[in-house]
Image (cartoon, rainbow, N blue to C red):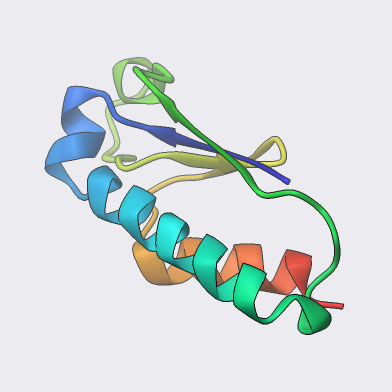
Length: 89
């Protein structure tokens, strides 16, 4: 699973660094409880800017992309739920 977290200025101000920290913690939890999760590797990438804030007048930050599915106004909780649901056996 590929997770991209935008760390552009707007996304960082609105919590993307906290999301990255939570994903790192989740990776540890998954590795400790591997029997309940599939063997898919969780790849996390911090992206400088995905450009969505510039393309719309609406507030969309922070932006996270999970396997090409874009999440606007992402929170740690919504991102963790999406990752866990996709990785559970």
